[in-house]
Length: 159
Image (cartoon, rainbow, N blue to C red; front, top):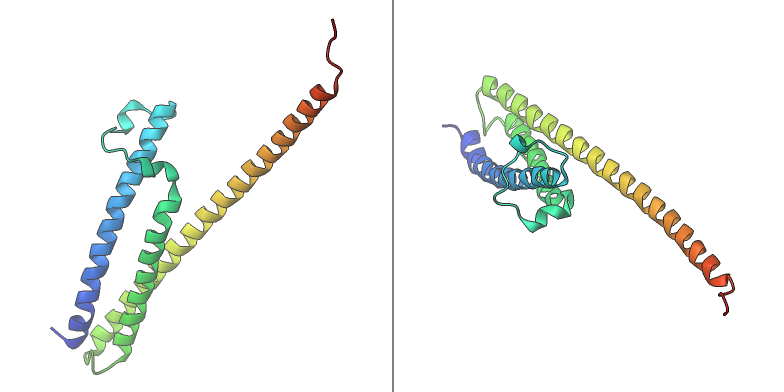
């Protein structure tokens, strides 16, 4: 049991506990989405279990995004700490283990990059979809508004 292991062990336990909690949130979120798909008739009956649906799941990804981003930043911090441990000869005197710490650091960094950019692309797509929907609603509202104005401008029928 070297100094580098003792330094990183508690941080890794906290990271694992946090990721486990996020996985539970993701489970309920995905189960809620499947419930919604089933209720709308867009899903097969065998894909879902209805029990445990929570009302917050209707809010979408905006509820989960902060938890996910904190987890991704934790991955980046793990990569940073592991890299610093790998270059500190006092923390890890064995050069083979220093190399392994660099590999672990690279794995956490690649994990951070993949997760972060995937989330960025998903949020960007969701925002562009909402902008399109809002523009469509604005156009539709203007059409209804002009229709109401035309109807009001027509002279009423007199007896």
